[in-house]
Image 1 (cartoon, rainbow, N blue to C red):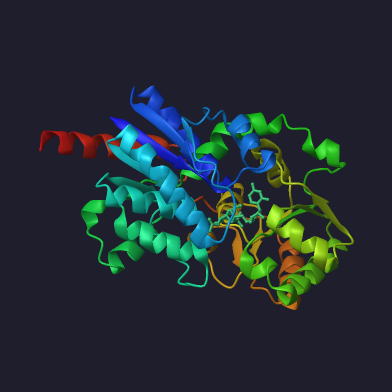
Image 2 (cartoon, rainbow, N blue to C red; image 1 turned 45 degrees about the vertical axis):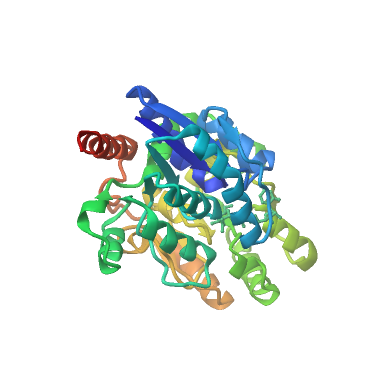
Length: 362
Ligand code: UD1
């Protein structure tokens, strides 16, 4: 079986790495395409190094742009690659613009698509990722889901059961695979921190950082929390740009984006995480570290019902109150959601092999 996998942006790398390892172990032909949506050394190269990803066979070098420009650039650059490689299946992960663009190209050329992390829904179409999820799932042939809520969402949209496969959470494969290596990171020493005595912040959603009034309110809340718990804030380039104009980060320990191992070590040692990231809601659930999601909704409700996540919204007073409340409680000990066990890549390859055998027999 020849499998072509797509990566484009930071949250894709840790989802594809375990899959590539499993495909190679089982002797399948594997092609890796990097669209170049993320291109900074600390948004891309550091992850290839930390995760042991192979050098991409094709780098499309699309870079930044408006949503239409970026999506169109990926489509135009990916089409000739797909025609040249002619894989049996294209694997896309997550919900970034590269996921959508490569799904559209593959579907139109009649190449089957498997979507890893299918079925998640925030029901908020102002969020660019929600549009990407809806269109990708509508077109993909194999929908590989992380949680039962995702299966339910797909069924409610009329997707037949035969296309839905509950395989679990592949981000957790990377987490489990690299936990030992992350323990070797010296990030806490470098920052002068000790485990359990600080919080971690990440923010990059356009709805939080592009709107000055919202960003100012969130920063005010973070400064208030930092009076009780020191906060370390590795800053996405989009956010860094906005902070330079907005100011107001006194008391927060701002850093450049960290690589996978350093960031994992930082999170693993933290007392509390405040974030608008999707993946971090899942990683904190696995670690059972309290997480406040600075958003009005989440496409990952299982991190609330069975995890350590709380939807905090963007009201500064509420964020501060919930953070102080979280610090009073002992960390939870609930079991992690089913199939968040580090074996999702193997289940995905099982599904692909079964599908491919059935197809070859036709
Ligand atoms: C993208 C994804 C988002 C994901 C996030 C993780 C979409 C719609 N959004 O958002 O789902 O959570 O990645 O980071 O695909 N930039 C750099 N260097 C880089 C990459 C970006 O400086 O390597 C800056 C550029 O100014 C760029 C801006 O960040 O315009 C936004 O990048 P973009 O890829 O458009 O979206 P993200 O906000 O990163």
